[in-house]
Amino acid sequence: PNVKLRPSGETTMTGSDGTFMFQDLKKGDYSLSLSKAEYEDLNDDYVIHLEAGRNACRDIQMKKKVALMRITDMNGDDITVLDFGEEGDDMSRIFNIFNDSGVTLSWEITTTADWIQSPVNGTSGTLQPGGTKGIVVVIDRSKLQQGDNTTTMHITSNNGNQQLTIKAR
Image (cartoon, one colour):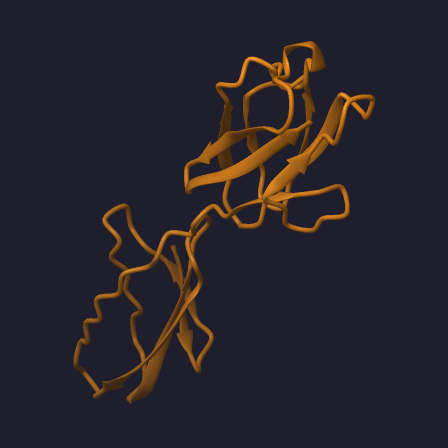
């Protein structure tokens, strides 16, 4: 991680073991700010009172960023249902997987209904931070039962899972 000393603005990098050192500091009050890719920036408000000729130690633990996945429609609105409507309506619908975080998101889609074909553009992949992947879902209307047909599509990621209800009549 990159470590910044406040208020002086001096910076240093940690070693492979996470330790760091600032040398020849003047007597005073200091705080630390840390940053590292795939971790949440940390502004530590703990004040270190440094006396002349003394060393000070501060242990800090950073939090890893969480990959946040959202399922949206083409307008970017969150959705929980993909409705194919009634006989004669479209046989394909599109939804988006959106990576709403600062880390890479790995995702996979599973479903068990025989009337849903595998998504045209794959059942797994990765998304960079802020990325969106459009998923085309196609149904086979000849395999639908009379009346309402409902199933759940599971979209799992390295941050848990989302469920998307698929309906057709």
